[in-house]
Length: 535
Ligand SMILES: Cc1cc2nc3c(=O)[nH]c(=O)nc-3n(C[C@H](O)[C@H](O)[C@H](O)COP(=O)(O)OP(=O)(O)OC[C@H]3O[C@@H](n4cnc5c(N)ncnc54)[C@H](O)[C@@H]3O)c2cc1C
Image 1 (tube, helix red, strand yellow):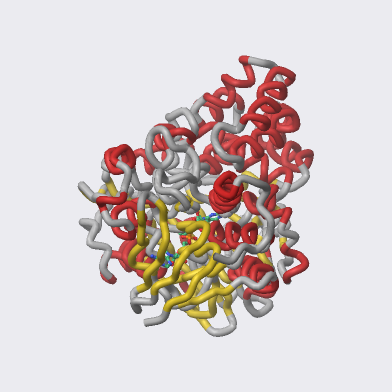
Image 2: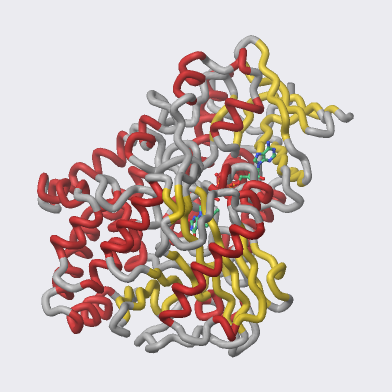
């Protein structure tokens, strides 16, 4: 057992924790980051575990949100080793008839390709780009700042007024499926918009899905879907390097098991090894809300309103992810005009909608909607020339009622169920790329249990820290009335994806928590925060 003291302790070295740690270190605070896993990064890690010579991202892979995030941009991670790489096309959707729907970084190329598939869709695409030109930046700022976003909100309102007023608001509120059908005549453009909405767990016929689809499609059009050269872990490594250069301390293999609270203020952090760390100013919890309030805090310390709200906290669905090391590029039935980094697999918008609705209803889809990546196409350092590092993931229900497919899976997600479901996923790609299976040199399958073992925040394989549906966003995240990093316990701030604005690698939850800690500390000491203070 050892005792130490710091101005701040950050629990968890995911991207949000590392962003918060950097902001506090920038203010001269002494900061300790405690991470349960052997390495930092949370769901931003990579390794050669699948096959030596092939780098696979264990979890997240493409980072449009990081590239657009004012906080992450402000950290100037290029000075700490981060280098973004881009695929020739941002996103592709191989279609039944052998055509591809392609989102190219150049909006005019995207429009031209879509117009060739269905006359008029090119202009319709450019019209959405025009709407984004007005509202994109204020919308991203409003989403990534603490709730309520007063100044960014005012900018957004002005921008919406200029972009067409209520008609623009209506477009944003329209569910993705309807937006795709109303706006475009061809299946290609519809698939691009709906597929981007399918990155969140919002059903495509529910409000919120449209703005998500538009957000990701238009980020693809503006900042692209970049990846860190050398693997996702390079992003986390840059955050860690920056933090250490400012005197920050990181301890891995250090699971926090209890936060000590005295008179309503967090005062101590205890680890599994029974280390006790005294905290002078703040604790930032890069921890899933159910674990923060249900495990790390004594129930008697959790404010009653928060405890009541947490009873209705809703996770997002589980996930099954497959990584493949291919000894050749994917043998697509038809080569796309521009090779995409990400690709989506669904026969139609209708099938995508059905697959996502089945997951919400507790049904394992027969034809799962796949989100996938060609990593060597995007970053040639990921595997030897002439090979491809590939992944695909899909969502599965947290509680399984039945399997709509032929395998009778019941949601145990043991090795056998995961492998059978991975076969189902692989067969979806094989139809579009005959010979895919025989190009596989190695395959790894990660199911809900593996995800949770590798990162405790991924409860049951939930990748977003809780559902992104409207009823748990903004002022409802993680419980009604919050929407901010404050927890109701003085000095303790929630800085994980369970906090506003939710999942994704944008660092906003960590930034909100770090800034809230600094602000509260300033009020506590009655003046501007002035560098290192030792008690
Ligand atoms: C399979 C998958 C694919 C994804 N794809 C993308 C993508 O392509 N692009 C994108 O932007 N986002 C993607 N995401 C989402 C994104 O990765 C997460 O939203 C993001 O990592 C959340 O960051 P975080 O810091 O809140 O939590 P995490 O990244 O989960 O990190 C939390 C950290 O805290 C540690 N921790 C938890 N409890 C404790 C404790 N008690 N003591 C010590 N340490 C603790 C964990 O070990 C972990 O390291 C994906 C996620 C997954 C799982």
